[in-house]
Amino acid sequence: MKITHILESTRPIKSAIRNAYIDFSKMTLSLVAVVTDVIRDGKPVIGYGFNSNGRYGQGNLMRERFIPRVMEADPASLVNAAGTNLDPHKVWACMMTNEKPGGHGERSVAVGTIDMAVWDAVAKIEGLPLHEMLAKQYGNGTANPKVFVYAAGGYYHPGKGLDGLRGEMQGYLDRGYSVVKMKIGGAPLKDDIERIEAVLKMLKPGQQLAVDANGRFDLKTAIEYGKAMAQYPLFWYEEAGDPLDYELQANLGDSYAGPLATGENLFSMQDARNLIRHGGMRKDRDWLQFDCALSYGLVEYLRTLDMLKEYGWSPSRCIPHGGHQMSLAIAAGLGLGGNESYPDLFQPYGGFPDGVRVENGYVTLPSLPGIGFEGKRDLIAEMWALAK
Image (cartoon, rainbow, N blue to C red; front, side):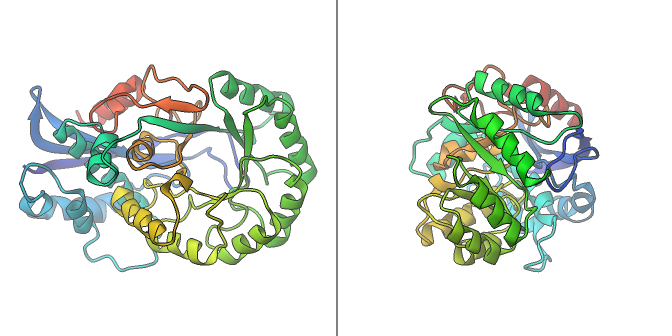
């Protein structure tokens, strides 16, 4: 068997929203299709993938380096020992041929996007949902399709006041979410505190609020926000400072007793390990948000999970960034603590298969082959159009 071709397209996911660091008025992503020569129901098996929001499309890197390497390789070098399926680890190694270690940049996004499509194809060829395949091959043998999800939103938006923020959050709560997240750091502290209090007053028992600064703060400001928010029962205080400033993260943990979260902008196992070694993260309360679609894909994410185990961290402390179905499958198959969700933003790439509902903060994954993209009509229509 072999990969017959790999297709890529840059797609817009633009929006008028902004966080503390960037606006999304020109945001894009890459959509990828990995086409195989395996025929099912008269059609070739195709795996699909796309990168998470916030890092733009990576088409040039894919077309110039990573796709040609795969397509020029001996097909026999990319399959498993039985010759019955692709081996994602071999495909990954092929893509990374002649790539220096370190300096990861955004090649990790390009590789992670193709890697997602490869895993989708592999699970479809096996005739299994990806979460079941992962549980059998890398987990405890049994997937748990019930996954915790939280609703991410609360962005700054032109003309959006407290009433608009409350309305947005109430919409998430009405849909069954028990944890909602909003942005901070894009307004003065006193205004952000007013926004936080407006949402907290809406919440009922069992519901919580998380806040996200998107790496905006220096240490002084991060601590000031932490002191101002210490009175609130927040689910977490996310990415206060630059993601590579491990000293800032460690110092913040010394002064802020509540749960902290970070890691979505760390794009390799090595960077994740530096966070664990030097970032002062506390395994009893803090959360890790590494996103496979931004960090070289599931092949690298498996290495990251192995590293965490060596340092005594449970995979249940991982709640990935990105809001995509790939991380949902990983969570269900490998016992992660949950997944981010964008109920209304970045469509059609966010959300769940049609018919999946949030109940008391959890979703139950349907038994669909692969990642399950075929269960979301608006998304699979985009994917089918790419692969025509």
